[in-house]
Image (tube, rainbow, N blue to C red; front, top):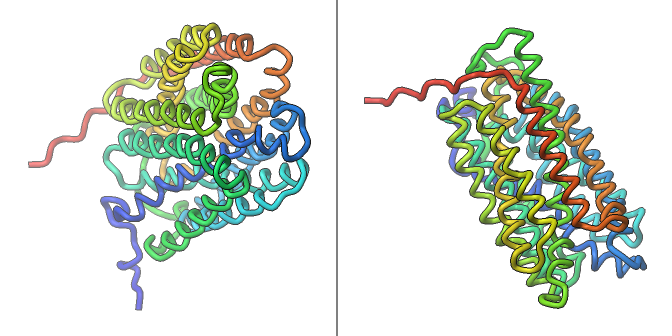
Length: 407
């Protein structure tokens, strides 16, 4: 018979298998949302569209639900249980991906992608707070988790390109869908059951205590900066495949090769999160995030005026800093918010940030069609400047002292 002792989460955190699956979940979350962006040109041809830009707006529902669904997902994670929500995430992502593969027109595709977005909303407010439970180095853990998420983006670019070329775009959804379902089954078998919901637990206090006024200011700045940052993230990750295809036109025409180049960019850039995650545990948030935001401005302008291999170099540099900014808000939640509330706070932040930034996906196709990628990248540079101005309003707060070494 299973006892409470058997099912309790150990003080040091989860087993290596559970941590691996939680990180894999982050990869699945980002990979599945970007399979469509990588395969959109092929899907557009099959569905009778002249240009990928005309089909791209049909994916906006996925990103809108990705944000709007985070609030109820976070609430359920805290009040019902994070383990159960993660099982629903894995199985739901797999089934919805397979549903996308059965669609026959743009509106069916839009509905299936929107359902996928609803399941994708679960991961960030539930999986990340679950992963950082009882860990002494949350910045490093979040950095590694961010690496996993962005490697999922790289896998989406690489695997989708080859599956589209060899089997077809539908297989690019079916095969990862089966993998996600398998992960859900293993997670259910290996993750210990929760003896009580996170909201009822003792402990898990915030590392840094702020006054209510300062906490509200930090939350507002964090949410505003995250919304602006996610516009950059959504624009680049959803538009880079077509940006590279346009930049290499006449030089490289094979979509599998373009996908490979994009995977190289994402893989290298993903390691920025490891570096930033470790810095978060050692240095103050404000100057770190401020410089990450400022450096994006000239890099986006450089990318607006380059072609072929110079464009590849410019986009690699851009994505290093776009990805490097990601661990910031999750680390702030761990730093300032009690674990009993983290999923709900993360859900509120994500609902605002991702709900607002889903506009980037909706306008990506029409904007590029009307003004071109070069002008669109200039607009993104302006958004990066706006983000830097928002981060400047963050309260000054030094990093916590490192944990004393055990003798």
